Image (cartoon, rainbow, N blue to C red; front, side, top):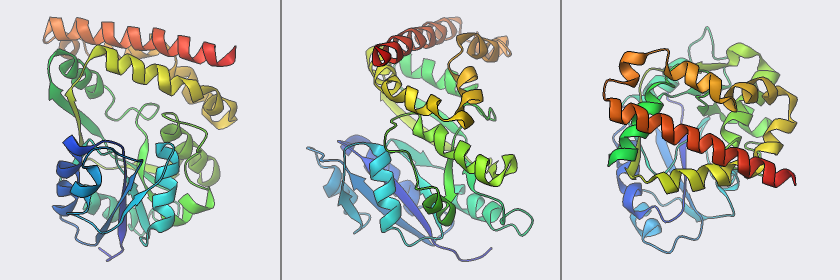
Length: 278
């Protein structure tokens, strides 16, 4: 394995509850050559103070996470960039597995991005529903999005689209595929764990409504149209969930709750999308 530097970039905003565990998981990576870059968006809590215990590279930038991520990439010195959220915890081999794949002599010349599977955890009923939902997405290309990139390719494509919030995660890998081919996005098996905290249904619905406001920008790019048809189709999502009924209803109450939550998200997201068009 080569000794290439990996820049891990974390956008934050009032992330005091989770940022310490996030940064600690980066420090514990089995691959040592990593720099940590935190790009904060005017937090009013102790996010910056906690972050400075782990890295000197703490900046302030807004207004949204796409701009924060792009800013972090420009400040980075790594050959590769890995973007994670402040409520995520990396398993110890994530960076090592990404490097091993990225610098495999058989694939590295065309590799533009790497998908890292995710699991959710948290407290309360709705967090359990979210964890169940996310368990269906592992290995599903039209839902999972790449987080680890060749910095050269990232810069060439001008990074994340700063006009998007939420959909930018899907947009960038699609642009990479358009430039380098379908096989330019690969995946590893090590997991990222997403800390949902004490999740509420209201929070998930507000988040979905907010993200859908920029969905039209995502849809406007032809390379995204095929993915969007599946991502925005509730029937496709139900087909995925019911493909494993034993998992879906291993706890019937959680299964029904997850279906209710996802249906509500689709309804609220649709309202947000159409309001933006009027």
